[in-house]
View (cartoon, rainbow, N blue to C red):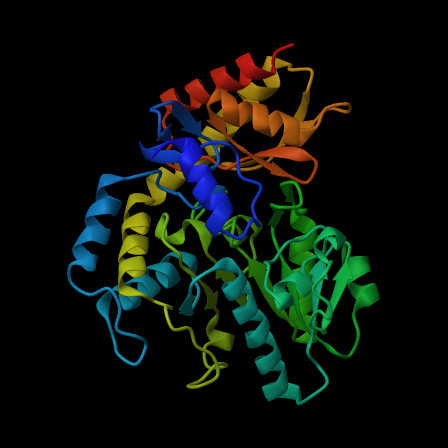
Length: 392
């Protein structure tokens, strides 16, 4: 099928909610992709942080194929090996106590919000269900996670939004200023991804964790984008010296298949009992087998290289001195790049995609989320495209 025929079918039969690039990716290997005509692209986006081990990793493909040939689904009314083995690995490597599996990041964040409100209700009764979130945050596209999101641009059209959220600046004074007797939790992204890739200050996060302990608020960490090795540790909170009461995860966990969920600490292990929460496809055997393969590939040694790769990319980009770009920021392979005044990040993004470098925008800048297994040769190819395309 030609690209034009594919595009026509899309416009006729698909709801047009996405601003798609005029590119149809057909196949690939690692961080190298090809369109329908065979044109090569270097992937600095990994499907918005999903392809954590790249495209068509042999171990991932083998694990998915083997499980698909055994059992694709049975529901959570029965035990299966993959989700239990996955829960054990995630808890062992994160220091958390138990896992819940769903399908997406929004579902994971909905879960931790429900967890916090149920914990508070069990301990204190009604009237203590407010969750504090931070300005510039993004937590999902359901009605509730949109309400939790701290960016006004997303608060349109879909009124009324779910009640029970209050926003603060990322400072302890601001959190205390908006707090009241009705607060049950604080939900944060340790690196605000959609907001422009802005890491929170470590001192603030530690002080916030202490405040949560003092007031018996749950500390909820949204690791949908930062988790599964993206920032240079399995979960970003491990670099901040805090242990959350719960953290959500999704995107890179199953390496390309839809999976999300959340982890809880010992204090919250029994908050959600039978019937309190559920997800039809949660813990799906094929997705769980894919996630087990991802965690095997992303061992401690591989994740330790993520920071080096991120430092290399940031150093090379800043050394180019391109007039349209400014400073870089981020953690590991979660990189934000300032766009200079007078330039449009959307225009630069479109030019790079057409030139063969798949990248992303975030806030007013550019965002890079390459596969964590990207090679030096692939990074250099991508950097060459960036330099060639944006020079002058």
